[in-house]
Length: 213
Image 1 (spheres, rainbow, N blue to C red):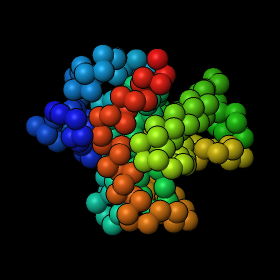
Image 2: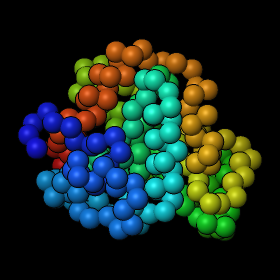
Image 3: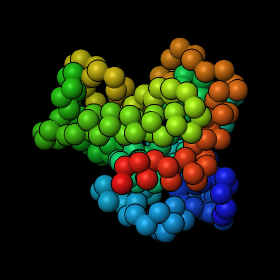
Image 4: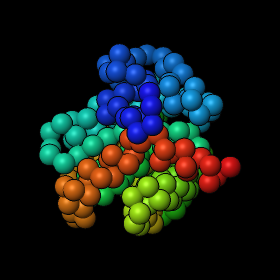
């Protein structure tokens, strides 16, 4: 794969066209991105290829294929991704998604406090930080300021939100598509395609990695 080629295939949990059905792969292998950039893509509690990750990805793919003007990426270099499972680019802007998979668990949120199964979780902080890094990388790639919104999406858990957190959306996987469709349109088709193209380029994330070194 050379400079400027597609870095993250829209339906790929793996890093090659042969793995286009990877949403159903039970155990992830090291991707091309992991081999090239030399990172461990599974350092944040093996997130890729998990049941919850696949279920969330299926909902995102329904959004992408069911509505015009939406794209999704399911893998980016870990130093930029930092615990984020998916990136969605559409009329509402750029959205990064962190999946919390807790079958029969309980998730409670009040403002910036998140408690999962009785323990404090850092998902909101992690998601905000990743959104900032991805915004910086995309802004540098396209030459203008790009705003990125973070979402935490729960799978299999009872979700109770007493007060919405600041600058991070939270919902179940089944609610995500409707939440994004209902957000105000911020980007025209040309900007959506430009950002998606930038997100797919190897050099966008290579530059981001260099700036963080």
